[in-house]
Image 1 (cartoon, helix red, strand yellow):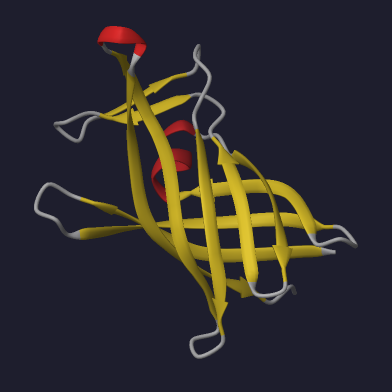
Image 2: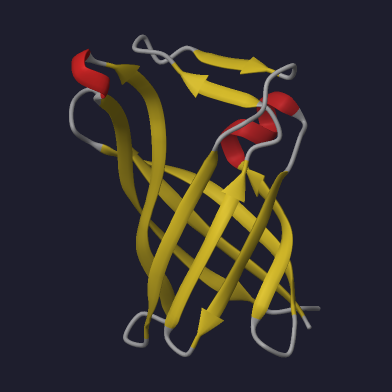
Length: 140
């Protein structure tokens, strides 16, 4: 069964404001409510011409999915976007719940940043977290 979702994920800018970025997922749901599909993202797809892949599942009022970038995509400290098609992209983990009062899925996304090797075998890894919301669109 085909489903289309549209929503926003939010990133925090230098001033602490939530910046919305539009995305649209087209997925094929199986009988166990697992799904695979593609994602169009306002920022990434517009700049690169590429779509992300997505895999996930729905379990009653819980949704979980992973969006995989097809190539390296990052924003530096000056908000300059860097795309390198010769390198593998990162994954973003989404986890959320159905909110009946607003008719949307809401939750958080998380992505692992760069890791730094420290003394005595320790590793420090940046973790970025933000919010998302999305609705199912009607199929025509």
